[in-house]
Length: 339
Image 1 (cartoon, one colour):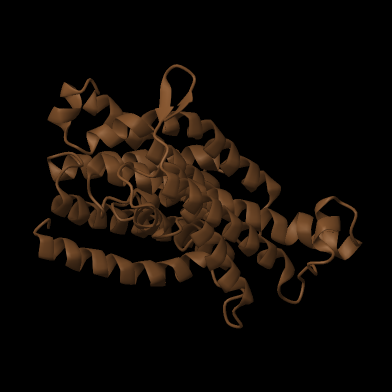
Image 2 (spheres, helix red, strand yellow):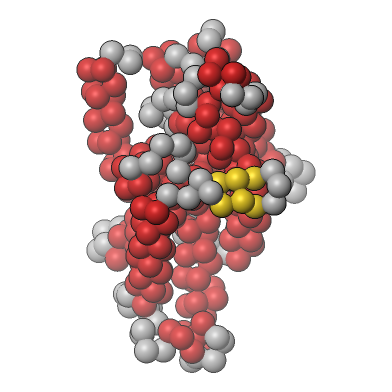
């Protein structure tokens, strides 16, 4: 048991620690490949000098203006989406209860589009994304009639809310930015192109501020997975824990959408991959964040190095792969009788 002060105690799982270290190593390799591969890549032998600001002017430009911010945003967004998915799936006890599946990501995208295109300079984009995500999750909870508990109703309501949010986003973009194809792709498909250090600072600031609250909820969430009645009997406030986890999930998802657009299925797949890698009970929060970062960095690397994908929004790539995985999950849950 690892204690962080008097109020936070984290169970230590040896396999999870080893897996986290390996994932971090692979993430560093993927990051180095992102910076070094391709026509504008920085040779590996010159990469250390560039990282310390002592490289050639061309290499410094690539690092500071082109690939460095993009890599930082990809890693931060992946961590945020991985954590958001792990929190949401744990408190709903539903592997399909992902923020993007139930329309939270699409709602955040609609809010971000309104803030950026209809109210530029009036409402910050992150605040617009947060408002859109909050509205989406409230509508889903009301439409189901049972909050976030029933898997089947959750999926149906989420699909409907996501469709409405995407339609609204298309309307806003088509009316306000008809000739800006790049804006359209960012707000509908999710894109890491033309990112800046300001975007990187935004997502990493939110992640770092959220981490203490996420870690504080790790224990109560693990207990909550046993059921509300047992959790209450063990001294955990199930409703308070669920509310806190949903709020954090909304904030993290909104931050991710505000800097990269609604990138699909990272929050769905990362927690489940993390759970299979660790073979441990509980939300596997740290591992989910690392898996999310690795998935998105690798997806963006594949897009950048693909002969047809240089200008392809990374959200299209994750959507194609995640759609297959979602189909697999739906079939599995249907066979189990959960839907």
